[in-house]
Image (cartoon, rainbow, N blue to C red; front, side):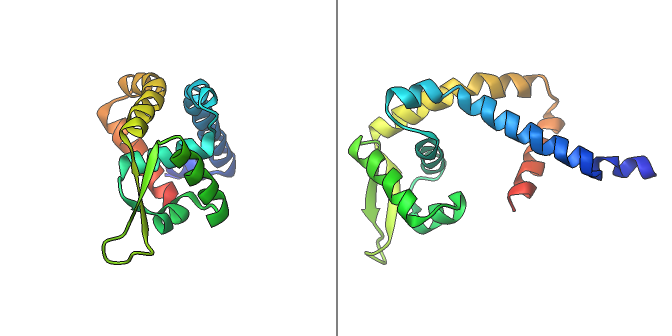
Amino acid sequence: MLKDFLYLKEKNLKDVIELLLKSYTSSFSDSEQTLKRNSLGKAHHRLIILVDNKPGLKVSEILNSLKVTKQSLNRVIQDLSKKDLISLKKGEKDGREKKIFLTDKGINFSDSLFNSQKSRILSAFKKSSPDEVLYFKNVLKRIIE
């Protein structure tokens, strides 16, 4: 019975935090060259991922999701706009509201970033059972909550 709760021990939790850090670092290092060639960084990459997965996100939703300041997000938005990777559109109901979309160039760029990361994640998923992948995704979602 007690062994059922061993995963809750502090040492194990610290190990999980280290694994999260290492997996983040490894999976995002695969796309660094593409970002560097385009004079972009991790903040740009995070915004591209969000907007690619949910086109038309409001700036307020992005601020909440990324937990960044409006000033730092505006810098990233300006950089990506200048490179024609994103476009901003006014909200239909509220003109002050801005929604962000990837341009065609932005979609292609996002695809190249995704393709550089895909093989590492796909390889890990192939070495796991469908249940393990599902459980992993569920645990990640609960960490985010």
